[in-house]
Length: 541
Ligand code: TRP
Ligand code: SF4
Image (cartoon, rainbow, N blue to C red):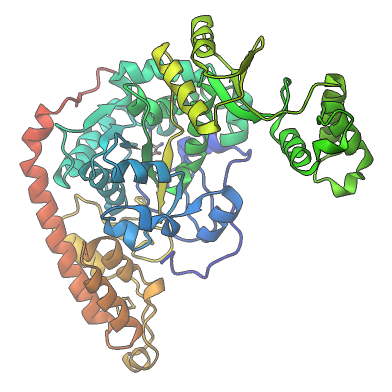
């Protein structure tokens, strides 16, 4: 389903340098906002033209998790989840849990109004709407600042496209009374939050993540912090699990947002073994020795920092899975602490709390505790209880208490003409605004995974996995009807289905879908007028 070229082994996630920002501005190619891009080599670049040839690498190299593994935990999964169109996620578990337990959670995605909404965007619309139906606070935003800054669109163009995105979102079932719609440029709270988040990010980081350089314009950078604020916006009222449904090209944004959410927290809660701070690697080493060494073997039946230091120095470096620097640093910290006993505890490190918040935390820690200049150690609290206490104190004292946002990633659709689906190649994609007959015609002339002759097809079966027409069935035309999707697949690979008839059926379904969708778009015009979103930009240019 990834496309009609053979899977390649190499996936390059564009998070390294390169002239991304310049290029993106002039690029006429479709980025993968809604998911349109097919299969050549991979460039996961939010402003490039992204495509993915091998999704497995995204798991292995970038730590995206396979959605399939979490599917059993999701109540009433949408067909896009069931059919593997949503192939990956980051940290979706808290979202699924909130859904099951009827607890608050949110879903948010954003759209750059750079052209017409097409069937790739429909995937994201459907994902937001489904989450809303499962009880999420749902958000759909128009990334107008980004379209202006990164794409150079005028405000008039932006307004026109925005309206089209919103009408399709509503026509597909988004409930604007329950959910929220906004455009970046007029959401003051988003702008304020963006400013706060910007104080936690710096240019070197943007350089490393997005390949920004000295030529990148400042507004483009501002649109990045704005997106960070979008992603965390649902949590302004109260912290809650939030899922961001997007294409995998947006993963760099998701990772940065997860980092920033963490950096904004007042306290960092961790395990610790002695009064001083250790980094993660150092801590693991001490934890291992704490487990391994028997206190009875030392003078007064106590394991002390200096003992661990001595043991570490006795161990040949090859047997330790750390760098000489780490070893040196941990040994010197332990030696300096000398006779201090090694004792596990839960630590609240004060990252950016106000004095009042830090005081309040100290008061709130039950049981044995030790207070230091910049941290409190609790001896009778487990990690989970400590996390929840840290959050409560933060929120009570005016902090955000952000939960790291989660994401889900959908596959990019293959273009109808093969290669990637691109809005700059008319025949490769179907716009939600295409005349139904035009949609029919495009499907009829699509490439397929069929064989050269009907006999061969009967003998060998078709290649549904490499067929853009089959993708249309699976991603859209079969709707919720899994049996129908499976029937098309089985008949195709079994040689019972021939491409002519198959395309005719798909083309008719597409014509019906477009006609129906466009009728619904007209019906929701009023709903859009009443919705709480500005349809005309106050800006010029
Ligand atoms: N950058 C996204 C795109 O290219 C649009 C966007 C802006 C977005 N803010 C967002 C997506 C927040 C998800 C969440 O289409
Ligand atoms: Fe594609 Fe249908 Fe032909 Fe199979 S029969 S290859 S699904 S067009």
